Image (cartoon, rainbow, N blue to C red; front, side):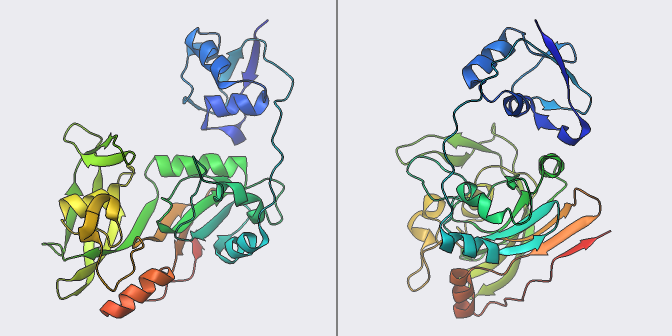
Length: 320
């Protein structure tokens, strides 16, 4: 017999599929999709999709669900050296939020052939909380810098909504090869995914998804290289890397995927020179949180070699 479930305020804005799987751990993705497709699951009387966001107070009608919990793989302990490194990289922490300075080269989540990743090490960042922190957004493996974690389900919902609603102001620094024609401006270049023998990549496509980036030249070295401030106004995959390579014709240093051989300079580090420098976002409990992160060692060395100014980051602060 169908049952009626109500979404509490603390769980508002959670995806329907995730909300149900928390309550019914034995529910498989295939069974869930079939129930949604056939209308056995309804939200406020209407059919819904797996990615439907649930408002507070929404009523879900669901059929009888499996009650036996699905078998769980035993959590692997976090290597001590990685745990210490991640803890030392916490730039801000309170009861709701952790802001981490993610190192270059560490994937945020696992995948084929990836056994060491941030998602698998989040227990090292539990500190005094009962809950394991949650990811609310992503950075590429080779992009360093600011990554936000939620310390509760309620905080995760609020932060995810802020990132999705573009209420988060993100600033990146990038060292690029060459010098853009203009000292600043806005890039409007739509993007779409393209498959290939070396994996998926993003390409310019007038019929693709809108992608907008504001940029400014912060410093330059005799047209050999430049330091850019990049502010993405949309969140497409690899947006900044494609916009620098294709729109500005100045690939990010070390970005062979989008810049090819032109992205490498003899004598300079071949690592990707893209860093999530600053974040300004609504705090889940009110006010605004502002955090900055120093550039990673390989970027610091390159900037020093090129003579670029590298001011220290401002202290983290939460403003009312």
